[in-house]
Structure formats: structure tokens, C-alpha cells
Length: 200
Ligand code: HEC
Image (tube, rainbow, N blue to C red; front, side, top):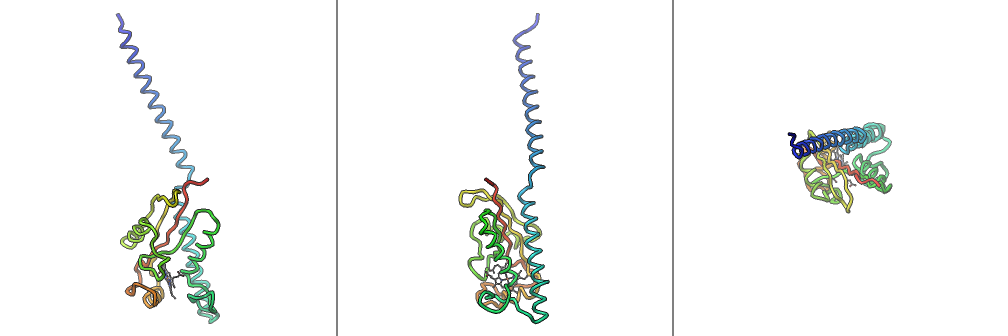
């Protein structure tokens, strides 16, 4: 004599199990597929950072240094009013301002916990944490998801180091600088890159 209700329960259970496993495999495959199709925001930030850094080095070495060596012009802080070209930090900040005007919700800037000008300071807790983290451990950037003005963003702070004595001398001697003990190799601040996640 067969136990029909038991068979029904076992059959139903087996079917449910197969359905759950099949769905799980499908969901995992889809997630993997989507993952390989999309550029992760930390990767995107690393590409953008590479371009920003390359442009700054290129400008410093092939424009500012060349102009100085040939006696043609100097990089000066008040370049808008005086004869001279922008400082490399200002070149970066100015590019960031021009990009911000494009309304892409994508922004970048140079910042520090001890900035020459307060407007280059941290504006959120995340930025503060990031600048502190890269100052402690400059071997890796500090990144994460943040909410700003109701939108979701991926923000990354890359360490900005005193790669030359001129960085140190100028910042230590600047009348506005709140910090005067920078040494070559120190982390002086960070490049903050903000990428929107909810793209319309
Ligand atoms: C001749 C002076 C001078 C030199 C050289 C210089 N800076 Fe600056 N730096 C400035 C000024 C002025 C600002 C503020 C610019 C502004 O907001 O318009 C600034 C801004 C910065 C900031 C943003 C935070 C702040 O202090 O306002 C960082 C970080 C920074 N510089 C790092 C560096 C590094 C790294 C170097 C060397 C590769 C360097 N600077 C070389 C003058 C200098």
C-alpha cells in the first residue's frame, strides 16, 4: 500500500528544492554577467585619478619648469591678476571647476585637513575620514558610497604627497598655511573624486 500524502509532500518538497536551486543559479549568473558588464566605481575613479595626476605632472614638468628654466614666465598664485601662469595645484583645481560647470554631477578637487585656504578643507565626515586615512596609510586610496544632496555617489580620496622640496617650502612659508612642518614625502592632502551612481 503506498502512502500517497507522503509521496505528495516528498514530490512537492523535491520540486520546491529544484526550483529554488535553479533560481539561485540564474540569479548568480545574472549578477555575474552584470558585474562583468559594468565598470566598478572604484576602477572608474582610478582611471580618472590617473588622468588628473598625469595632467598635473605633465603641466609641472613640461610647462611650469620649462617656462621657469627659459625665463619666460613663473607660476604664481595670483596668476589672474599678475604676469604668470597658475600653480600646479591651481591648475588642477581650475580643471575641477570647469568640469563642475558641466552639470555631470561628477567632481574632483584637491583638499587637505590643513589647507592654505579653508575652501580646500574637508566638507563632510567622509572626506575628513578619507583625508585622515590616506595620511596614515598612503599605500591605498580611501573609497566608499556616500549620499550627497539626496543622490548616491562613490567618493574616493587619493593621497597627495610632497614629491618635491618646492611643495614643502611653499606650503610651510605661505602666510595663510596653518601647518609649517611639512617634509618631503609627507602626505599633504588628497585628491577627492566624486562619481554619481544614480545616473538618470
Ligand atoms: C609656490 C607655492 C606652492 C607650491 C610650490 C605648491 N603649492 Fe600646493 N598650494 C599652494 C596654494 C597657494 C594653494 C591653494 C590654491 C587655491 O586654493 O587657489 C595650494 C593648494 C594645495 C593643496 C590643497 C589644500 C590647500 O592647502 O589649500 C594641496 C593638497 C597641495 N597644494 C599640495 C601640494 C603639493 C603636493 C605640491 C608639490 C607637488 C604643492 N602643493 C606645491 C601653493 C603651492
